[in-house]
Length: 425
Image (tube, rainbow, N blue to C red; front, side, top):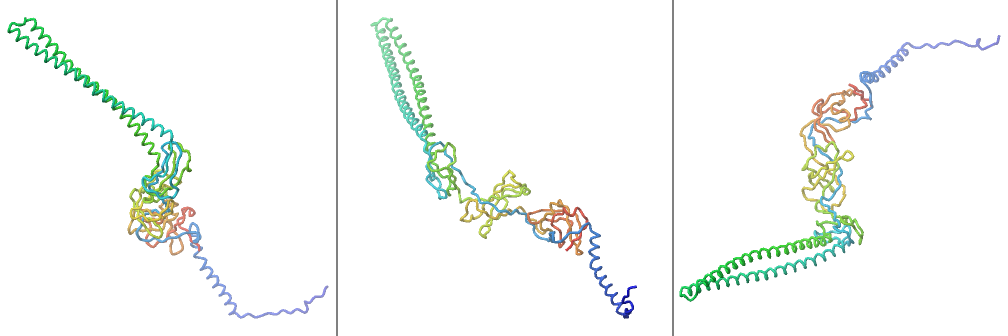
């Protein structure tokens, strides 16, 4: 056998005091109780809840009582309420007399279109008008001359009748004295009757001739007046070749180059009326039905607030928004520029002394009928609520909660309809 050190080994024993052994057990038990006391409530909440979520991922808000103002706040773009574009009424060469940004007065000539064709037509029609006026004057002179001739015939017939009447009178006296036979008296009476018929026809001819001459003169005058209207219209078109500013303001944009050849009805330049500016505000589609013309508004500019009112609402929805226009109702601030950005607030209505909470995704995810109320034990309980008026920043709570309650205003989709959820820190 191999020799080892077993003969040299000696067993030793250490006596442990009974008190120390009990202290170790007591300390271990205390630690176990403390750990259980710390873990047990959380485990109880987790087991009694449908799920557990971290509070850091959620948003909370307290139910308060106050005045709920339904409003729309957005960054608006300043536009001119009156911003006309001047068009070339006829084709030709454009001569600009202003530059972009120049201040202009009303009726000031801003550009002129030279149209040789239109000017030539005007001169031709003016010559035709002169011919028509001369023809009218000539017809009037001929009318007077012809009336004199017909009147002369009437006068001559009147003289012939008077001569025949005297001849009848003389013949009767001579017949009574026996100087003339009865046949001569009868001849004198026939001559008188013939003179009276001639006079009557002459008078009728005068009437008909006067009517005919008046008709010819009226025709000549209508031809002249028609030509005057044609010349007046062409003169108006020539005058419109000088493009005048319809408002006092500022030249916005030049749409053509100097001495450019433009077609009829082509845009030449724009004029901006700086005295009447409006703010163009994009409004979410959900509020479009509640907008009404005349609603009050507030416009922020350089730290100051100006009053305004809603003046127009676009009937078209573009990218989930409608375009509204707000005009200044009081004094308009100076120094405004086209396309300047201004903060605008449209006031829809106000609900005083109501329960309200900050608006969040819970409104849409819960369809406005569900909310989770946070209790003092770190649990959130699902409740049925009823919403009233809503704004961009807050919502009115009609029932289901009370003042001072804390709600989860984050999206409720991840809770999956759980009745109670645990909030972990």
